[in-house]
Length: 68
Image (cartoon, rainbow, N blue to C red; front, side, top):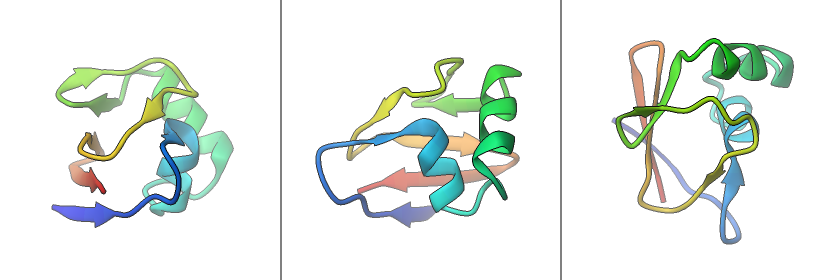
């Protein structure tokens, strides 16, 4: 499980996928989220700008990311 440290209170899900290099572009991140391919804390997340807080777990394409 990889870790991603955010600066501030939260990061939006589409920006997180791009910043953590799980997706190559923001557009790709928005597509995979809208297709239901991303989970946050074990639940499918369809909101592009979902606020991801420290302590949450994001999974996409077999990769797991712990947000700190």
